[in-house]
Image 1: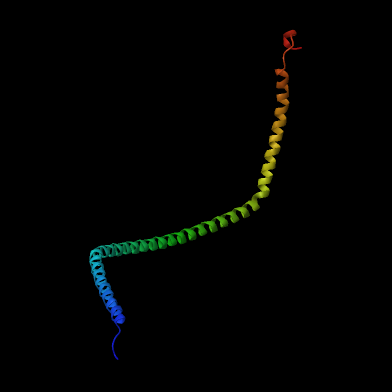
Image 2: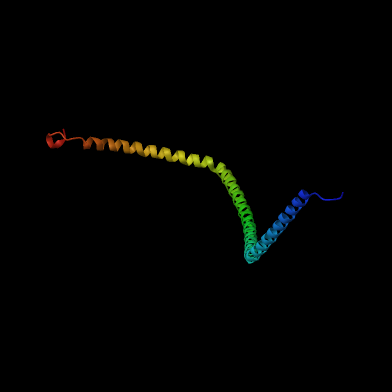
Length: 148
C-alpha cells in the first residue's frame, strides 16, 4: 500500500543528480568570483586612493576659488566706493564750476563780443588795404611806366 511508484523515484533521482551538478557549478562559479575579487581588490584600493587624492585637490581648489572670489568682492567694493567718491567729487566740481561760470558769464560774453568787434574792425581795415593790394596785383598795362 505504501509503495512509491517507480516513475516517481526516477524523477526524484534525476532531480537530485541535476541539483548536485548545479550545486557543484555554483561552487565553481563562487570560487572564480572570489579569485576575480582578489585580483580586483588592489586595483580598487589604488583607485580609491587616487579618488581620495583628487577629492582633496578639488577641495583645495574650491577653497582657493572661494578665497579669490572673496578677494575680488572686497576689491570691487573698494573700487566701487572710490569710484563713487570720485563721481561725487566730479559732480561737486562741475556744480561749482557751473555756478562760477554763471557769475562770470556776462563778463565772458562781453569780452567775446568785444573781441569779435575788434576782429571785425581789423578785418575791415585789412579789407581796404587788401583791396589796393589786389589792384596792384592786377596785370600791368603797358603804358607810361605801368601807371595806366
